[in-house]
Amino acid sequence: MRVNKSTSWQWLNSWWVILPLLLGFPAWAAFLYAGLRGKKRSWLIWSAVYFVLFLPVYLVPLDSWPGDAAGGFMVAYMTIGFIHAIVIRHSFLVRLQLLEECGPLTGAELDDEIARRILQMREDRVQRMLRESERRDAALWDQELKQEISESQTTALRPGEAAGGEPVD
Image 1 (tube, rainbow, N blue to C red):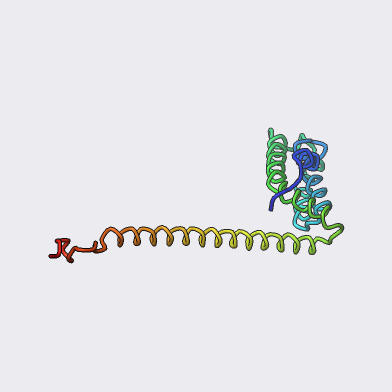
Image 2 (cartoon, rainbow, N blue to C red):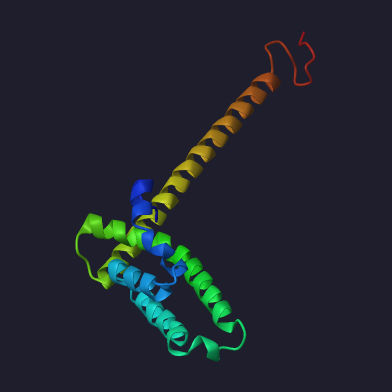
């Protein structure tokens, strides 16, 4: 589905995507916000997964980590969380747009509305394709008919000619 809102609206409602890049607000906070605001359970589950993955950074003292493992873990955590946030951004914006259009809906009602609109879009696309195909077929048939008429006129017997094109006495 398309987001039919302005670019500024889309960017203003995408601020949470940068949270995974900030050390104070890791990926779990971004997915918690997206899940609550977009009413999507799987994003809330991802928030919990990211939270559990982030716990070792706070619970294990930095001097206990071997070498630069803590830094490497944080860079990987931030990168994966940021990419994941970018991946779900469009779906989040679609859900947010529908919530604004339809009013308060539950997560299941929102999923149903999205599915209904996607099916409607597909049906509309199929109808457009059928109309276009019918137009092409009609134009092709018209062209073939004109060509047959033209050919039959050029090969038709002219008055006073025999079948071989020789003049009749």
